[in-house]
Image (cartoon, rainbow, N blue to C red; front, side, top):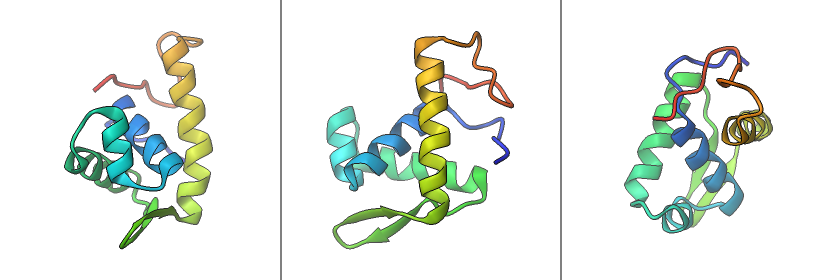
Length: 98
């Protein structure tokens, strides 16, 4: 998967939390932001990747096949960037703290 240069760590974090919790609203509560912040960040991430990561349902979200693959890729990169095991993150393009 080609990683876009405009992807941010914040988008990765929001995506990872929403994927883990299955709801944008629960992810927002956990991260102390509004639900619209999570929704917007995930939509921007989907647009920059050109992939639909979540199936939106009335009472939550579920990962698409692309989203399932992305969780392992993004999760690994998020951990690498957070622990600074690479300096700076040397994923195909650098991670931005944004």
